[in-house]
Image (cartoon, rainbow, N blue to C red):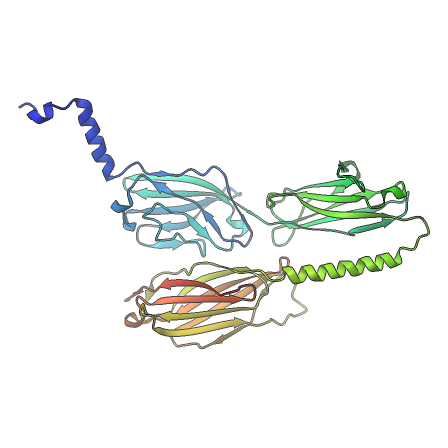
Length: 425
């Protein structure tokens, strides 16, 4: 039997084109957008590792059709799983990590990681499966720490034909690779000369927290009073810095026998004033608050939800949690605030310190269990906030959990929300 008459009217190429368009309307080739440059982040910050896929129309997808896996290969060439979503259950192997569930159908499987540590650094692999298609992408995450740079003496007071050393201390940086240069600018000139032949820089030494420190020494020998007012600059280049950082030493050359004591005292007073002003300005640092994470809750059993609050100063913090029905009716409420810990002589300045807790308005079903820790080398604080809840299905299922974080560096509290899903045992 031959083809129907209406099909015989179309050329073969036209039939193939119609078939291709019909197939494409059902779905396409699964692809992940390629990211060539590494993701850069600083220690303690929150990071987002992108994974955006395409090839399927959102209208034909739902979350149960999508599986996402994240792994990381570290600098020790070991591979470990970070996160897994099998279409139903979200499993965060790295504490606090999450994939926004409202973005998967739209093609966003990006991994969010709060409070980044050096151990999080590595090559991340995102694997997306929409049966029968599979796509893989790799993105490198670089976690860095900015150096803190100081000099031994901002003003170097000397007589002609004498030699002194100017020291530049660079501390708290990661990774280890750093470049230090000394430059000289003569008074009244914008030109700078390189002084590498008169410098000596130590090898980088690792601190207890994993960061590094190094010292660079410059030998200074003024030949005449004409060099008074010359400026020596210690210039630091590092991966964590967008631009080179510079610390200056000003040369003060005086005739022999001239008393420098009053100027030294004045200089020390000015340094103290500048230090106090800088400390007052830089003291307050805003906290970063992660999303509330945790599994579905079980009826009449104590469950734990988590929230990471990181990178703040000072340490005083207030947290408030309350439950509301969708109608806006408040069900339960609890709050917590930190108090200044008592320091003992046995505690090291680099030690991690826990802060005493004060909790108010606890209810039988809802309470807060936070823990503040401090890393004295950076003078920043982190808080691991556990929310303990014993839900009742009829009351708490579908309720909205609201968390407010208040801090001296904030103009208004930071708020996070989570809709509760309570399951029967």
